[in-house]
Image 1 (cartoon, rainbow, N blue to C red):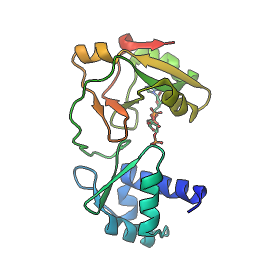
Image 2: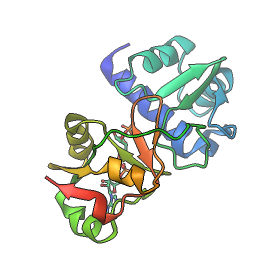
Image 3: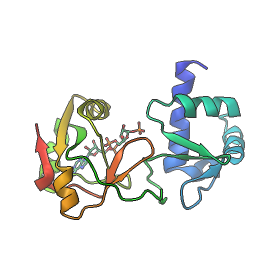
Length: 179
Ligand code: HQG
């Protein structure tokens, strides 16, 4: 399976497992899972036929491990806009986490902090390099450090997804540093 097809399948799966399951007539359970068979059938019925082998390949090679497969079911590891409970236990974050963004939204972020926007959580990266890649999706990347240790001590909850993305509800401006 070539790289282009892999990326195309990954984007198609992300879209329907995170945002628009109804568009291909599937429903996710409360924890975000759907049976692989049901998903493959729905993809085929909506003009995007893929084999089980292709799906398994995409899950295995996903650079960010975007998907989890268990008991013949699949779900996205994070990034949902539909309501799902990933069942992730609260976790103690490292002292600093990082958020990659772009200059044009900094005034707004300085004023109101980081908000989840269309997702369920603010997504934070464990290292600067990852945050640079996240920011670069939108333009010249700017990396903010988040004083996650202080947030944790102040009672903010953190979760870490199966693929190492740190999630929290919001980051007030006082815990952000541009450097
Ligand atoms: C910005 C990808 C104005 C925020 C990545 C970001 C990540 C604000 C955008 C994952 C704001 C939201 C998530 C405020 C935040 N005012 N703008 N108060 N607060 N923003 O895509 O973190 O490839 O929802 O800086 O690798 O960019 O999909 O979040 O620019 O892990 O697996 O609002 O998506 O993973 O954008 O990316 P997003 P994100 P996948």
